[in-house]
Length: 362
Image (cartoon, one colour):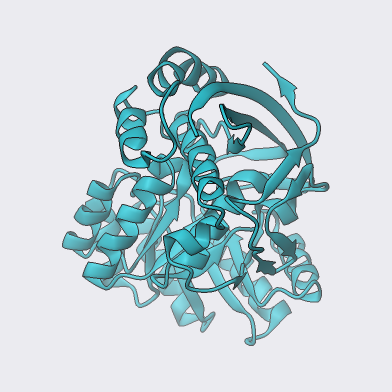
């Protein structure tokens, strides 16, 4: 099974409601689709969200990286030799982790098809069903409380609350949400790099004093500030998760050696795909650090790939793969079934994606 072509297209999927974080507001998923064609007629699909504020990858940069560098490196290669493919993919261009991730996902899709097995079984096969949290966008406290109640009524038992754009108001937000939902629901918060370490320690201690029972806080400080992240970890009792601080296996090792965080959030668009994400899982197993699998604002193709990784690996204990349920429609035929918080995998070869509606090929 040899690669004969790599095609790119664009999909647009509206969201149910605007997605708001400390970094941005988004109304629709505007992603690049990767379609890898082979000499056997098999097709592998990948997806790339241009999340410039986090990865630095814009739509134009993604297209340029694949068309001018990655495509030339991979045409003619045999899917069977996945290790060499991933080596060439990594060396084809510096950085560009999201572009690499989209291609990596399509390659793993074909790899599963080659051996007529779902990817999650090839990678470990730990489980076939996972439960995700759902994200509550940052808004006024009353609106966030209403959104949280709505999520609970839809069956969610873990809420990921976006904070970080106003430390004092963040405390009000969490008080309003906890009062609205009670204590049978897990609340985790994501500051998206929105505080400095002093603000983070002050805010989190206030939340502790208020008895808000926060499960964890994700990336409270800027991603580059490893020392600040460690200061927060050492000075609050709420467990700290590193997200934007970890793009590579080397980043993961540094965070774990410094004991700068209690958990690691793996996202395929940061790691450059499944190949490097597996390395981070292996490192985490050695250090005994549990991981979350998360996503950017993505549709079903790339989130489905993350689902397979989550199902494969025991070290991934927390799931934040709500991208498809935030969308108002699903253009993807096949793949895992997203039934609100419950995600069920099937045993179709590869990632099980049969077709994608509405692709506008470039």
